[in-house]
Amino acid sequence: MASVLCTRCQHSELLPFAAYSWGTSTVLNQLKNALIFFIAKILTARTPGVNYHAYAGAGSAAQLCAHIRRSGFKRVLVVTDKPLRELGLVDQALAGLADTGIDIAYYDGVLPDPTFTQVAEGLAIQRRHGSDAVLAIGGGSPIDCGKIIAAAATSAEDPKDWIGFAKIKHDALPIFVIPTTAGTGSEATRGAVITDEVTHEKNVLSGATLSPVACALDPELQMGLPKSITAATGMDALTHAVEAYICRWENGSSRTEARRAIKLIYENLETAYNHGDNADAREAMIMGAYYAGIAINQVNVGTVHAIAHQLGGKYGIVHGVANAMALPHVLDFHRPNAETLLAELAQLIGVAEVGASADQQAKAFIRAIDELRAAVGIEAASDQIKSEDYDYLSDRAVNEAIGYFAPRLLTDAAAREILGKISA
Image 1: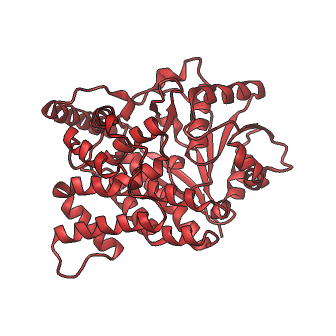
Image 2: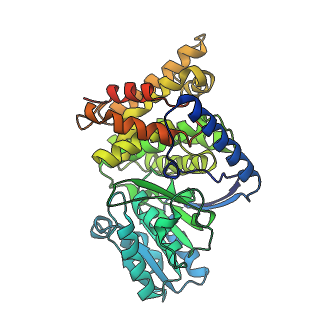
Image 3: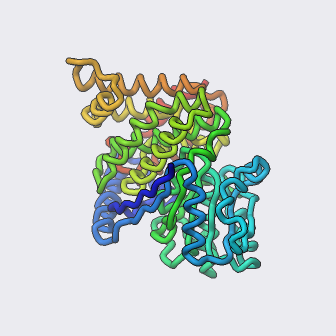
């Protein structure tokens, strides 16, 4: 039975990784990170919270469609990808809009890691159609692309001018979302990642008006997911939740949402991977990804992403796979500064031995996460990662990490050590 979740949380106007180009002096980086942290706290205190509106459970896609219909929208642009249309998942998701008189146009050209060119293609369809709302159906790529199409539809500016910190300030078209993977949490965030097809750089664009009006968390649309996608997206969501929990900024409900997410994902990912038709596991995963999305919407991601983004940009390594490889090593790097929080997570998932020290419990949590990675078929290292690229990868990862509030600031030496551990 589908249900409605409506919540309101404190959010943060966070500083996205693409907004910076810093030097690599450790002391200078620490000062810059402290300044970013100070600014983020001030801006958060002055900005209204976020309303989260989700329909959850089997059949919730139909509930969202009914909500769109009741809201009076007449012309809706559906942003998705061709495989989802060919599989019939888009038609399944849109069944609630059939025979309602709503005029639907489609942009199904979204590819993994959507580009500004794809945004322009979707925008051209929106303008010809005169769409008054955007409905994104799919994983993080269609959702992110749909968000920026919605923002571009109401502005004459070049979307590339919005790269950076909270630069989207105008009203976008209303955005509705039906995720078909349990991973990115983009259905709960006010940001989008768009790739520059020339430089292959991933850029964050953000703003309050990118927050979806409502979403549907419907496990019925995820029953047929391939095992590899289930694994990668699940580890992506788990990374979001863990990074939000150990973040040195406890903002709003971030740790509460992160705990919910970690427990749901840890207890259900392996089942969803091995038994893709298990409805309970699928529902737990999609809820876990959503809670993780709410958590990072308040405190952002962290060092794992600073490394994983470079692996995706340089080699095309799937984002969730890159996160899964880096996560245990980054947690070990953070352990001296996050021992207590990691020990709490060990207790949360039931791997902390009675009487063990906080350090032992923290190590147990890290082992458990690494064992989960292996259990869902993700390799510990990749032969795509080349030692001759360490200068490039490390420099970019260190620079990106300055904009995050992780327990410990990434250094060049630490980045190189982690890269060495995930290079086959």
